[in-house]
Image (cartoon, rainbow, N blue to C red; front, side, top):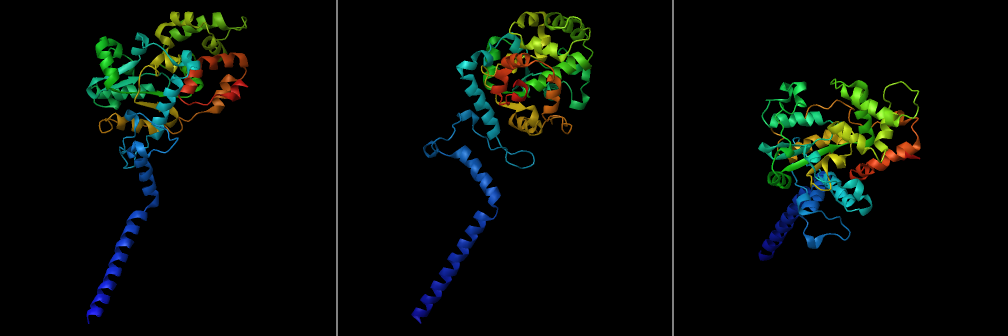
Length: 356
């Protein structure tokens, strides 16, 4: 009788252990894809220093992924944003590119940075990269208007009415305090495609009716850079390229004043090697980057980025080829030499199809 009880107890123990093992297997492998994603994310955020793999890329503490959730409940994927910042740091350390990647944090740079003290945000303006929409976001956050839809178009760029202070308006101590503690970001796009957008907007369409571009700046460029003096047409993209690629362009820049913000380099505008930005967004991936920036800045529950028309942010190689058609390789190479820092800092592919 005693042996029968022992046998019965052993059977129950085996059945119990099988049930436990089955439950464990179910919990572990029920959703292999989800598990893999979570495991990879935890590997990036929580692995102790002693357990890092040999050759694994290291990130500073302030750049480790946060693990925050996007509004649809999906895990944010911050690795791409960390890689962008890591690329900037590497290029900034490249002595061969120092003249193309470094600039002083001058008043010109501080004038480009808009401040939202209420939510501790700094936004560096990079014209022709969808900046109007980001300015609308900040205008709402600063309380000047209740919603983006309520902002009149003529107010967005009127800095006496839009409620957007510039960083240059503060004392040196206040500037440094904000640069060290605020969330900082700006947006970039392919440098050559941005130049095409600037040329079209200021010299061809001119939708905001800014006559000085056609009647003051364009004639100055034509007088110095047009090779065919019998040509009577208005400014052509070829003239614009020669001006921008001229190593001695600065004397004209001084005459043009702050209007040059639409075509100078990102380096000259935002000083990415001198200012430690929190996030760099890319125009080409704005559908993903805009909500990520809002989330990281802690304002996604307060405001949304305006709807992005389908296809508007996609890089258009055909358009780039069309605009550069007929321009000499020498002029294009000079242009690239000036903007090489932007291409390398922000991971844009060298346009060999135009240069070779």
